[in-house]
Length: 519
Figure 1 (cartoon, rainbow, N blue to C red):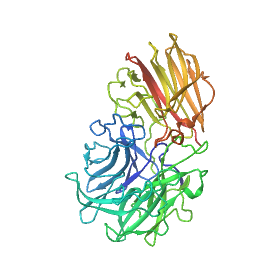
Figure 2 (cartoon, one colour):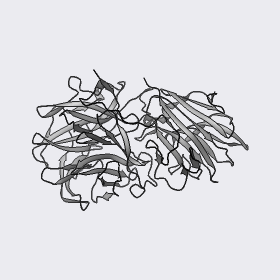
Figure 3 (cartoon, rainbow, N blue to C red):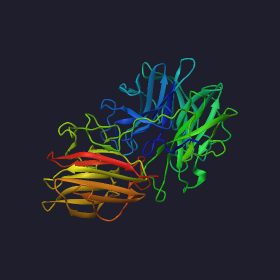
Figure 4 (cartoon, rainbow, N blue to C red):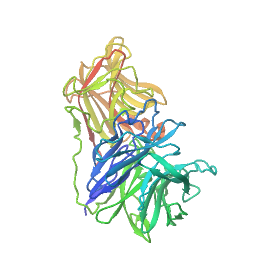
């Protein structure tokens, strides 16, 4: 029997939403404060996903200036209707500030996508679109109940018709449902579907942590009343205990195949080294069937497994990015991201062909700014990453090198800098906003190799002035500092290249290699 491995999108790819167009499948995930926003993927078999771009890849679409870590773009929904793709999402401005909901459109999912249509008087987060048979289109989201919250984080799902041509919500706001169980909270992530003459409303409840779950209700009328599924939650892992290899299952979307089978994508996490989730919330795939017009997920087991039978679709592997990026193209590959919308001319693939050049600017990676950092997700529990860097610091306050990043206050940095007028390599672990120097050594010459290897929560750092002649820098570093369980927030760990300084010094990276070492 052919099987596949979960997660199908490893690393920080949360809140998946999926749609099918004939025999092509498309999927988007949240991107929070990283730019470009909303990665979009294509698949023929639901398992092998190839990134085809980002939905929000222009500053006119996405201005993340001043957006705190773990805020920004939340929970996109992807839908297709009569030749047009729609992506609707929430821009969370800050911890307590506005939640701005908008949608963009495209005829080609690879782009270009339109500038945003901002929706006024659309409270809450996690918007979704539903196209009804009569031509009407509806918006669903969550909000605080108009009558008040009965308990902390009590939310409800609401519905309103939307005019997609004008970008306006029209008609009356309707309260639909506030969840299956009163002990739950944070009712969110609503999606509407019409099947078997019913309107099905699927949501997430219990928060995005250990008690996360997926619940469902249905109605003969889109405005309700909604009948609650007696087997709710239809999917959760909270009953399996915190030591189960997959936790936090929730926030789902469903799709039927061209052969009539049904599948669900959802987020989940893989804790390791205790309840620590350096990889963030990832995208998992699980089958389900309909019994008595209600879903039964993974019949006989009811959980998401690390290895599962392959869908009844022809397996088609897609082109994936090579493990080593030689920076020999005119544009960055899709796996690379900036922290917030990039401002200023601080990087180039053309000034030194075959190299990624980073140009120093005053922004530092320990502030909520747009530092000269280009990074990618950590996608494996065990991995190796290395690069070669040409850089000589010229003034105190300048540094460049490799950064392992959770947020501005939780990170590990291996950088080259001046100490007493002499170039040194310094390894720093930053926790709760405080730096601890773990090791410092005289730096090799202008051109040098740097490397990190991770085995679970043990991170090892190395340097060399000749290829494969590695020297260890410091002792093993505790990687739990890169977990949101320690740092807070909702994103997974990143790693990448970084420079800072006031005099426009440059660091050139010839290549960057990332290799997953998981079995």
